[in-house]
Image (tube, rainbow, N blue to C red):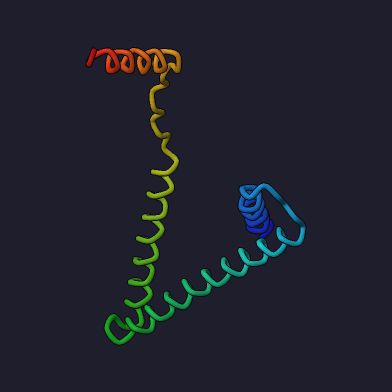
Amino acid sequence: MDEVLRLVAVLAEAATARRGHVAGGHLAGVMLALVVAGLCATVAVGCAVAGLWLALLPWAGVWGAPLVVAAVMLGASLIAVAIAWRLRQPRPTPPKVDATALVLAALMAGLAAGTRGK
């Protein structure tokens, strides 16, 4: 639970730092809202799993419903791991452009365009 609160604190600080100010009351309000949102999302996932389980009972039976729900949760976790792995991969950095060469090229292009009509 400590890690969750630390994560919420870091996210709240990052959210308020973008605006250029960090106020104690504001930060506490953001942290509380993020904790409540996380708990609500967790409860929503639990309710969805329970609903799936109950819906599958008549079709899959007492032994099959938990297996189907476990397979769905395993698939969701594999998708989450794949997304996390993909986001962890380093993105290629764009080539750096020399500003001096860029300015000189723009100057030459402007001179060439300006003297074309004369």
